[in-house]
Image (tube, rainbow, N blue to C red; front, side, top):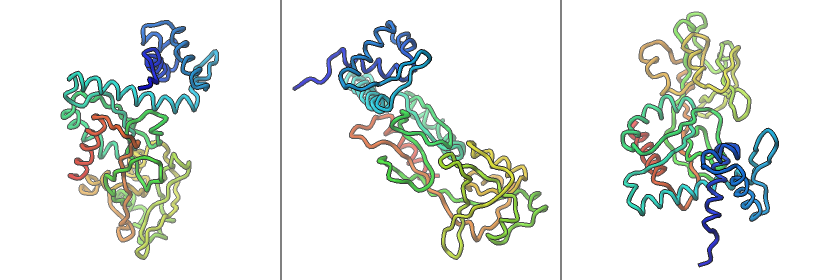
Length: 304
């Protein structure tokens, strides 16, 4: 069989990945226990082989190129696969092991995912979790994440999508707010209310509210004095403090609705849902740690 790589080239790939992660030749050299010059030579060998630049070098910083970022994803996947294969064949891996990087939006993280992670850690003690909690969508390929959870309908992204649930939406306010402003009875009444807004990171615009009108789902633009950015949970704090109306996931306010701290309004118009999906790259090889997480979260969601 024709050999594509020798030991030196495999080592160069490891140093390339380390340089991407450490963001400098010097830091990668320290981590690898070699000289910065040796790291630089390893990167140069790869660049010479493919005739592309992996990094843009300046006196102040080392910036990875688009080609370098793309190549890093595949190198990291390949090296992780080799490592796991070595552990399996040597009998060292009796259980899923390694670092699993997850991206999840704030509301779903706090009310759905994070409460389940203690049980996951108990079942899979050899898996380390790095959980990116943010409403900014990471790129699984270029940002080196194993899996993500995303809300809303999906475009064709070339990723595998597994539905977790259809999360019900509702509009809430405090009793104190509704004493000052009588509860809306129709969609048109929303224009007379303070509606708490959330700016979508993907568009930079306030997200419309999803409502039902004459049996059809419509998107309604609302207005208010307060707009929150980045942290969706800040809108919940505002709603609970009486700042106005807010459309939220029902799972995030169940306790407050039961206790009466929040009151649901416009119920006839609010029977809408928003789907949440697990997303992960298509691949002929799937690590045991990723399989473990996928199976766990799908089973846990089915039981919720």
